[in-house]
Length: 232
Ligand SMILES: Cc1ncc(C[n+]2csc(CCOP(=O)(O)OP(=O)(O)O)c2C)c(N)n1
Image (cartoon, rainbow, N blue to C red; front, side, top):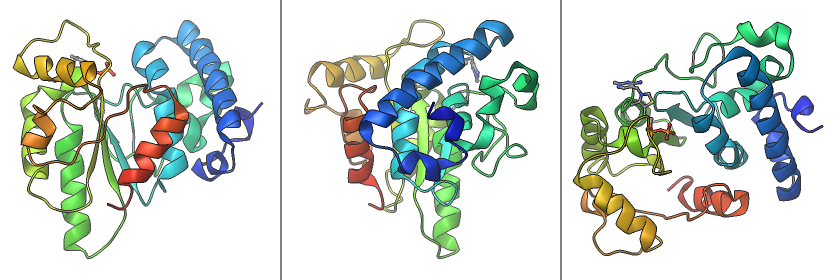
């Protein structure tokens, strides 16, 4: 079993793509084990398994800072950052919370549970890094449902003129707690339908560079995309 041997992101970096694919299967089993007995967020975490493996393969957390929106999709991240036992051993279920928590790990940046927070929080980290003359990547992870919240839009607006390393990973799974509403979602659909090639692109219009990944569960294309934006 690969998951049993993962104590930090350094252990993920030693794996081949085939091994990471096997690890993803083990992580889903562990998620199902914990969630079916203990409760928690199923869909958001099942959807983020490969993306989280790829992020920890490419980036150097905790120097590189990953900020999760809501943080209800951070369970795969917890598994890969020293907390796997709380998904493998029922006696350890209560050692961790269902959201990111800086008291649990140096890989968790904020205590959050609200939507639409990650881009603004992460833009503050990026600003602080630059003011202190430090380097490292700052990555905000946000879902399509949370993207239309006011605080997310403020963050994107701010990011568009920061002109510094700042990466926003939009997990557009066309799923939210309720149906998405608003003009933004027409553009997200257009981008999905055109493999990200549509001329009308709300991210580019806000001043950001844009990389499209069609299959968000394909480790190879996720690694390629993250490597293309790392240190940019
Ligand atoms: C301010 C606020 N409003 C509502 C919620 C309830 N809530 C939790 S997750 C979520 C939306 C999740 O959808 P999305 O951002 O697309 O993420 P996904 O679960 O698809 O990964 C909502 C509305 C919340 N946590 N905070």
